[in-house]
Image (cartoon, rainbow, N blue to C red; front, side):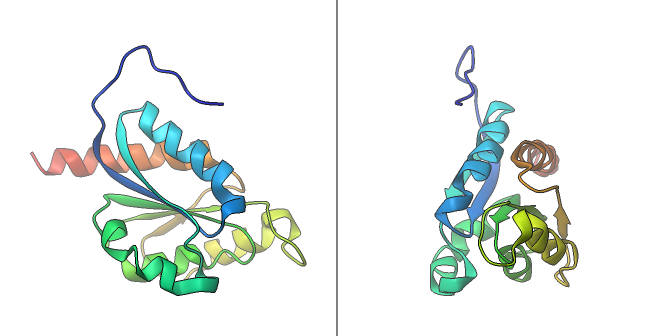
Amino acid sequence: HILKQEKEKDHIGCIAVCTGGTADISVAEEAAQTAEYFGSHVERIYDVGVSGIHRLLSQEGRIRKASCVIAVAGMEGALASVIGGLVRNPVIAVPTSVGYGASFHGLSALLTMINSCANGIVTVNIDNGFGAGYVATQINRLAERGKV
């Protein structure tokens, strides 16, 4: 579902929404559209998972410019830790229930994200794109206020 707005609003700051793979896009879109609805500018950076780290590293500049990053990933959920090691701004980790093998419907990714050794990462619940988008908006607003 696409969120509809009564009128076009200015979108401030920058939130980067990144996915490990294409299967994570539905949760990432929930986060991105939530943040846009509440007035944030969103950069979508999809399919940059650690299984092809060159894809992530080619987008490093765009990701570093963001006030905060939402990292959406299933399987083992390593994307959040890798991004957390690359950027200085907060990372909101969103585990997804997609995956095969022993992903346990997102539990594997959730445990990896909660146990990350990278600083500045917070984790929301499995498939909670809305929660991530809302918190990212709050962080983005604080960052924009700090620029004034």
